[in-house]
Image (cartoon, rainbow, N blue to C red; front, side, top):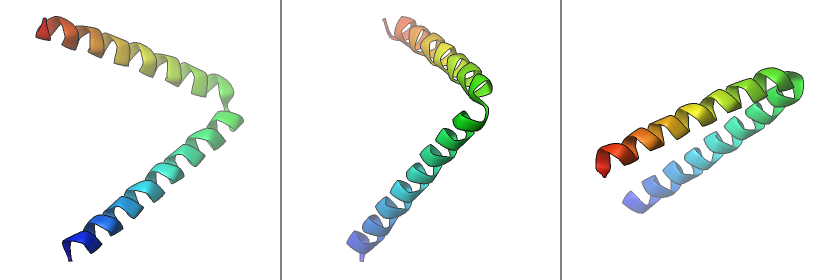
Length: 58
């Protein structure tokens, strides 16, 4: 039973990821400037978080 639950969970996660990627691509086609801005902000936030985490560990 555990194997079945794991398989169903993996399929659900895959479908959710696929749906999210398709939605993001569609939105990027409709509003490319906004999409690029949000991507840039996310990139900067991720870089800052990674830098901060690396400094905390070292």
